[in-house]
Image (cartoon, rainbow, N blue to C red; front, side):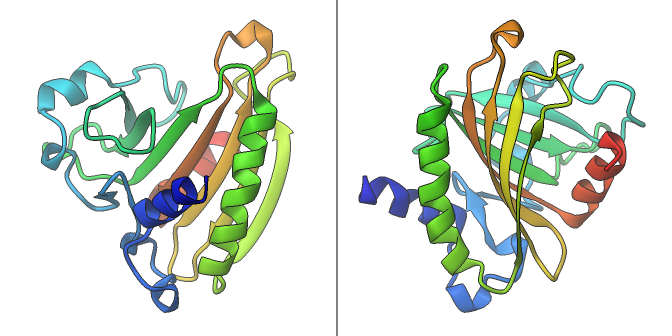
Length: 194
């Protein structure tokens, strides 16, 4: 178990805690913000996995691809990577690794708590915010989002979140470990209206 968490921390960060103020220093499955998706996936794989309904009603400034179960993944079941729709270089603005838990939100929350203990020590210079609210994608209001977010002084954020989906949504509960650029985070806040 301890080895699992050390692996997660190492996949998030290849820097020392004294340098943990810049979100660009972190990696998920060896991938960093600002990298080109083409360094890890073929253009065909990217296009095939774009979520065309991901940000309905937005200005279309960003889109994402859900890239699940690739052989080089060591920790996560899947990645969600955000980029600009007309960018031929597929530069990454956000990346999230997900671990699926079926309908076991308790196991997800337990992992989140353990990761938070590690990341709180690593991200001492960031602002830590804990939230729990209904998920906006579930019209019934029964699905919840439990997040611990670290905001960096240099902009951007890292987040550990558990998604507890209602039975009506027919989605698995999952843990997400994400890193976002300041630009994408600002856009996302405007999109969701908070």
